[in-house]
Amino acid sequence: MKEGLKIVISGPSGSGKGTIVKELIKNEQFMLSISATTRMPRQGEEEGVHYYFKSTSEFEDMIAEEALLEYANFCGNYYGTPKAPIEEGVKNGKDVILEIEVQGAQQIKQIYDDAVFIFVIPPSLTELEKRLVGRGTETEEVIAKRIGRAKEELAMYKEYDYIIINDTLADAIDQINHIVYTEKLRSSRFEVDIERVINN
Ligand code: ADP
Ligand code: 5GP
Image (cartoon, rainbow, N blue to C red; front, side):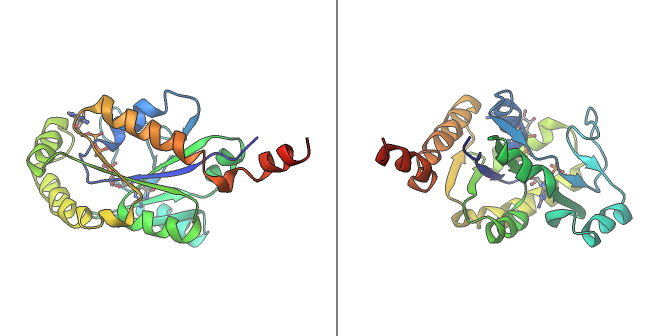
């Protein structure tokens, strides 16, 4: 069995990453890397499903134990990717999705040079604010912080292999599925197949 892909999905808060990923993982081909965070759970978020919710000292213990592949501070909270499930997932042929912010994505780039980097952006900042307000999960103050951060994040788009403008959700999902389909045709993934062709 061929290894799955490691797919990093970043984008400003409210751009629609979570919504896109939720749709993608309905397909068993994908596995979502569940992050650890020190932020409080939102209504409806479950431990071990959306995040592993940690206190700051628990999170700092994970850092000290080197249990995290990467971590970053985003708008005042820690977020990090547990190491173990990623390797296991790709070995089992799953395309593992890391839905993480830009500083974490930079760290992953140093670790995995074969990961695929996708940046999801909103059609406009006005629409981004509308979506964040519409989601109704953050206070006005937190929304303002996240929009401020969005401008800095958008400037980093060139660090990514692909840009998805999440205007219509179905199109965004379709585009990501096309990227995944094409990434699997990279020559670097065909060593074994070429051997078989040559020897038969
Ligand atoms: P993120 O995970 O990037 O912070 P979410 O997936 O939570 O963003 O999306 C933010 C809000 O925007 C949610 O209320 C979601 O339902 C909505 N949303 C996501 N994608 C679209 C879209 N293509 N068109 C309109 N609303 C969207
Ligand atoms: P939220 O609080 O909206 O769930 O997430 C805030 C930001 O943290 C988003 O940009 C999200 O992609 C990012 N994030 C979630 N998990 C991780 C992680 O494990 N590492 C990093 N670096 N960022 C993460």
